[in-house]
Length: 132
Image (cartoon, rainbow, N blue to C red; front, side):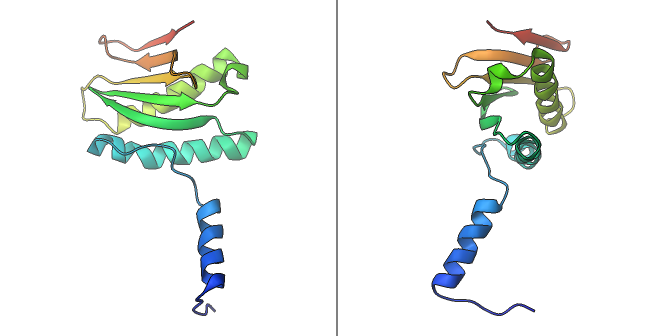
């Protein structure tokens, strides 16, 4: 049974729901990117629930099939194989949101905006590149 709430109690309830709802760290862009957001936010929430740390800060649609994911300061502490695994998950989410045959790339960047890792098929084949 639910009863209608008003005043400060309803504001507190909305605040609690807002705080515990899966946060959206990505910004809107193309229709393809908008379709990517739900899966991205779900993955980010699962990673945070599992590790207790927020791994992803933001996602941006750069256009031309490229999405940029800003990672938290704890990303460099993650083992390289885990970094590739996370980037591959993001690539597959982005690939699934795109029209068939369109080349895509996920570019992982640090808090300073410098590229860390890229995963994509921009050159006609699947490639993973670390940027040091």
